[in-house]
Amino acid sequence: MEKAPLFHEVQRFRQPWIWALLGGVALLMLVLGPISWGGLVIVGAVAGLVYSLRLKTEVRADGIYLKMWPLHRSFRRIPWSEIKQYEAKQYRPLREFGGWGIRWTPGKVAYNVYGNRGVWIERTNERGVLVGSQHPEEFVEAIDEAVQ
Image (cartoon, rainbow, N blue to C red):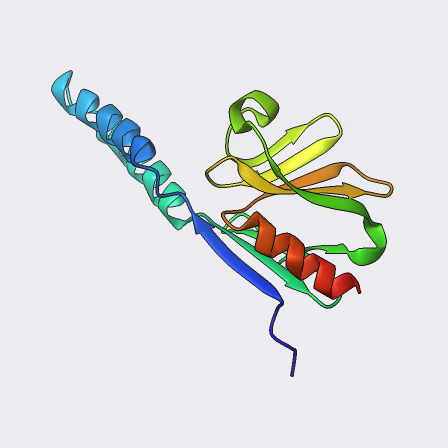
């Protein structure tokens, strides 16, 4: 039986502005008619996807695990041997990564759902990873405990 993770966090997209935007688009489609049922179905599908998205982050004995469900079926693992350094940090999601979700920029990738805090992980031979977290200090403490 596998040991419980040292750190576990699940984050979801629940920001009111996202739902206001999707609702506004649907309302505009209805008001400016004729009703485009195909468009409403697409807005509904996007809303369903955004509602189901969740970022799971775990610190385990053998590394850091990330999964953005339903986009990832299994966890992505960053083993301790690939981590050069890490730190809790505040960042600017729009300016540094162009928003939230899984975001790629030259030399780095971000997994974030909301907020502006997370853990920056510098890898030995690959791009750096920023993992958004509502509890970055606890995340770093769990990493410290795991690598000792």
